[in-house]
Image (cartoon, rainbow, N blue to C red):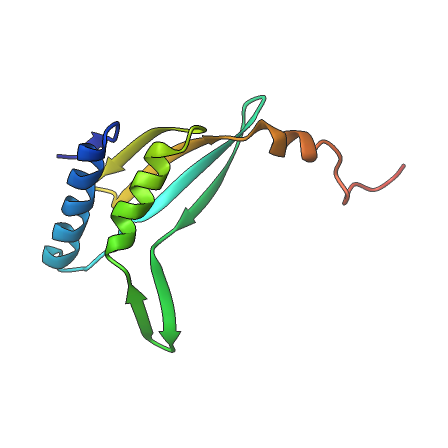
Length: 115
């Protein structure tokens, strides 16, 4: 499997199981990250990326493996999130979040110099 479209809870479970299997068996132990594309309307998209980890101390991180399935189901059930996919090769889950109100808030540039 290279890419899995996530449309059901069963798909979410399959993706999560695959992520954990790859994490354990992958020599590089590469974490799968989440990549949320925020559609601000009018063709503008921004990006939010994260992994379900926390830094406990210098050089020591904590991974909640259950957070993969929880986050995938949260994305799956959110009414404004679509196009959820897991790319096993790239170790990334992508989704699109429809949020045109963000684009409306950013119509004026506070850093723009006045003439």
